Length: 312
Ligand SMILES: Nc1ncnc2c1ncn2[C@@H]1O[C@H](COP(=O)(O)OP(=O)(O)OP(=O)(O)O)[C@@H](O)[C@H]1O
Ligand SMILES: [Mg+2]
Image 1: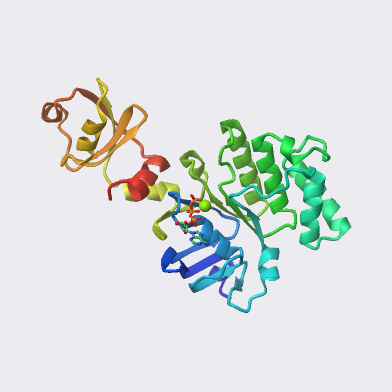
Image 2 (image 1 turned 180 degrees about the horizontal axis):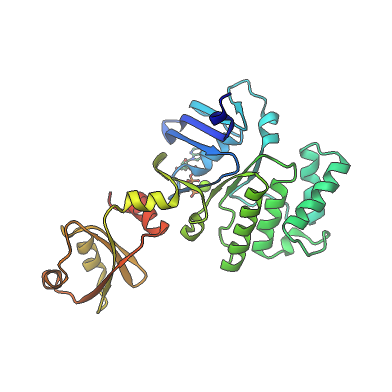
């Protein structure tokens, strides 16, 4: 193994996953370094969960090569070897609501074949890691959403995996709890764990060291957040602030206006990239619209909209 390959927690080469005649994942290539926080972004149905399920050994790919924690999968690979390497917090809440926290954790420990001593040691470490303050005999159903997600995270790392797959861990969670959850993700990375995370919140994507953007089964961009912002927005990005409210049909016509390379609503304002050097006064006349305009720095939300949701 070269030092470069040994630094990689995940390598995916030409991965495709087909359900009947539909490709959920099409010829995908990427690698994740050990200890990296890797963000996997894309619209609903882009193929993120399907890719994660392959990497956790839950479904077999139609074609392609996958290596996780140094193990290259093939049809003979023992699932248990893969499952020891990875923790998986699924997009769907999988703890038992009608069991207590302690009962859920000890059930998972038994599935993971942890002996009693190791389980207790890990339980203490993990509850301390998430700063869990509640009694362990609380029922999961009685926990607030954000705390439930933290307990799910605890459950997914109980067996001390090298690589943790978190599939939309903060969906439906309040902003303060999302921030707290991301502090935990960063703590995991400090413990040298590789974190592979999906999210629809672009403020969260800014915390990732590397990002893959996926669209209809394919990776359309792959880089650090800063490099993505530079490469996806090589020209200046402007905030376009009309002095009057503009109708939906006017917005649609502006999106397709030849002056704009990119024109998308952001709240009541718009983000715009121009084909040519902007001449504001002339444009006001052409569009029959008064507006203020200023240069802004692109965000991951701009990158996402332009690559995944935009017209190109
Ligand atoms: N077992 C399956 N059988 C048939 N189609 C499937 C199966 N699993 C997923 N799909 C389809 O594959 C596509 C990708 O689904 P996937 O769940 O991977 O997307 P996703 O990026 O995780 O979306 P979301 O953001 O909504 O979670 C979707 O069109 C989905 O309906
Ligand atoms: Mg999904």
